[in-house]
Every structure is written in structure tokens, then in C-alpha cells.
Image 1 (cartoon, rainbow, N blue to C red):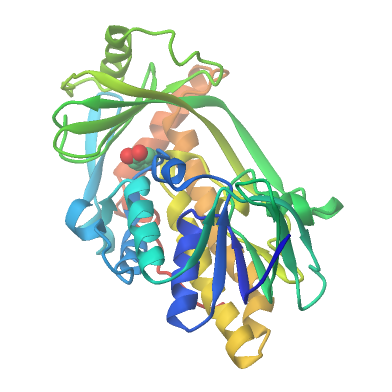
Image 2 (tube, rainbow, N blue to C red):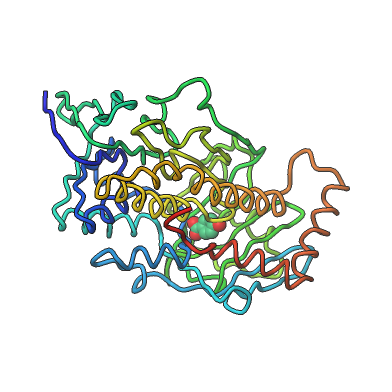
Length: 393
Ligand code: PHB
């Protein structure tokens, strides 16, 4: 049995856990980061690629971050519906931009920087339980990659371990079930080797269902279309996939190429009822999940971390629990705004299987209300590019 002592035990080496360990180290607070997965698995995780300006500014603090050099700045998106196409101009409306930089590239930067900074970062460690959550010396019990047991004793435990969070399960009491919304559709995602079909992202509401045309680089593109959650990922030929995508972006000619990755992404909105339980706190996907339509997942995780970093510094450097006592309330304000935005973009753009003619026409009326109003467009631009990041309530 290995027993290690640290100040903050962080479970999960995703964007939230790694960014938090960096900020704590900047303030001289030692932490240990554990992840069930191998480094290779983490670096190969395919996720969304839109970073809010505040997220890029946080990544600027990471030595060697390539978000600005490899990522692409986007100053707007295109909204397509009912045979019309409208550009939402982020710079004009909100004075901000977003960056297209795939999450797994950000993870490669973060892992390299943390290891170079001397971070105790352990891969292949499964968490079996959390103890002492009601005391000042909580900890994590786990199993190392070689099967031997490990115990980490800390001043605080952070669950940054994703939507299937082991930490959340370990502290779950009857009132921590949380709030859910399931959606009757999913996204079929592809990666294709082709030139970009458009300079900016296209969010398209068509009578055949939603599609999103995104990019990755000059030679690789990411595209999605709305599908049934039970779709068999291998059932369609490449030609059928292109026909489906093309039918959903009328007026835009898609540049086709070989499809080398396919996946079906299920949609769920979730907020944990309790973000903090004594000396244990949840951040990122462990605390909440959003459907991908608003591209908020990683950005919301970084917003949590900026708040939690200040709260933990207050507690561990200055002995004040004011920040950590206010963390859940402060984080939940942004979480529920982002939940609303992600739900709104999702419900406005997708065709629900039970939707009738009324719902369809009402949806077009809603889209028109947004694009015909500068205030409507501005709300979308402000929410998409991200509300200002906060470090306290
Ligand atoms: C992506 O490029 O993967 C992406 C972009 C925008 C979204 C979701 C996913 O809203």
C-alpha cells in the first residue's frame, strides 16, 4: 500500500484537473493529479473544439500552449434556416471572438506543461472511494496501474473526473441526484480529409434536421448531423453520409473527402444537486454536462476552475473558508446560464421527432426573431463567446 500526502488531491487529468493543478502550482500549492486513463487515451479523446476568449486567456498562462498558434480565431458563425443564411458577427455584437482549437490538442499542451513543471501526475489509477469528506483531512483510495493499492491524504479533494465521476458517486447522498434533461436525438459526427467547405462554422436548421459544419485544419474537417440516439455508427456508407449532410445545408456545397472517423454523441443536460460536500468539490463534467450545440463543455469547466482556484488559495494560504463556502453558488450562476443557452440552441436548431407543423413553424419564427433583432443576435454572440470569467461571487 502506498500512502501519499498532498494539499489537493485532483481526480481527473482532463482540462479542468490539469488547469487547476497549474493555477495551484503558480500559487505554490502542491497537488496530485490522478486519472484512470493512460496518457495516450487522454490525448486521443475527440471532443468539441470551440474555446471562449476567457478560456484561451487561461491557456495563455500555460507554458508552450499552442492555442493561439495552431488554433484559428473565429469572429462569427453562420445561422442557416428556411432557405436563409445569416452571419452572427461576434466582434461587432460582443467585441469578442472564439478560437477553434480541438480539446485533445489543448490536453497535449496541458499534460506536457504540467510534467515539465514537476507535477505529480499519475495515469492508470482507478479511484475506489473517497474518505474523510466531513473532516479537514479527506482523501482518495485507489488502485494503481499495477494493481497495488494507493491512498492519498489531502486538505481538499477535487472531482474533475468527467460525467461518470467516481468522486461524485463516492460522495452521493440521497439529495445529490441532480437535475437531468434527455433529448430525443444525438449527433452523428465525422472527421474527413478535405478542404474547408466554409470559412466559419455553419449551424443549420433544415427540414431534414440539424447539421453543423465545423473545421479542424486546412486538410481535416469536422461535421455533425442530427440522428436517432440508437443509430448504428457503421450502418451508412460514406456516400450516404455525404448525401445526408449535404441535404441539411442547402445552398452550401460541401467539399467531400474520405471519412476516417465516425461517432454518435448522445445529448444530455445535467447539473449535480451538490457541487460541494465538506472537503470534496466537483468541477467540469463531474458537476454538469451540456449538449454540444452551444460548445460550452470545456469552457464551463475552465470557468469552474478559475473560481475554485481562488477559493482554494483563500482556504489553504489564508485560512479563510469564505471562497469555498461561496463556490457552489458562484459556479451555479454561470452553469445555469450555460445550461439555458445550450438547451436553447439545441431546441431552436433541432427537429424533434414528435414535432408537428406548429412546432416547426414556431421554430422558424424563433430563429427569425433572433436574426431580425440586434438584441437577439447580441444575446447569442455574448453567450457563445462567453460571459466574462469570474474569480469570486
Ligand atoms: C466542433 O468543432 O467539434 C464543435 C464546434 C461547435 C460546437 C460543437 C462542436 O457547437
